[in-house]
Length: 156
Image (cartoon, rainbow, N blue to C red):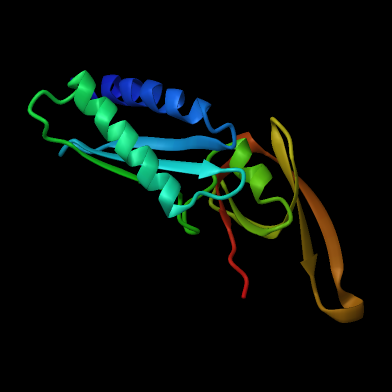
């Protein structure tokens, strides 16, 4: 069975499970040649380990029941994206409004700033340069089509 077919089947099953929890959403599904299915889920309220375990158990049972892998030779990993994972969809961007992000453009240049706003087509970030009285704040409207990746910057 082709990876695209497996991903479509698994995504269908997962969407049925996610429908019961409106705050939870799919970020990505990958299938490795070793039949390792790796899924990133997120939630508007935060994705706990317990939730990931529940989704894993339910989805694993569904995959076995549907006999997607007749030999039973597959593994399933469900987790939330780590802090070093780029944001993939608008729900993730919205969830991180107010946080500092590093945007890498298609030409590999970067801009760091506070994420202020997200629309269907772009994001607005605010960048402050300089210190004290010489501090200057600028806002930049960045179309999604110009973004290679966006990573939330963890601040301590």
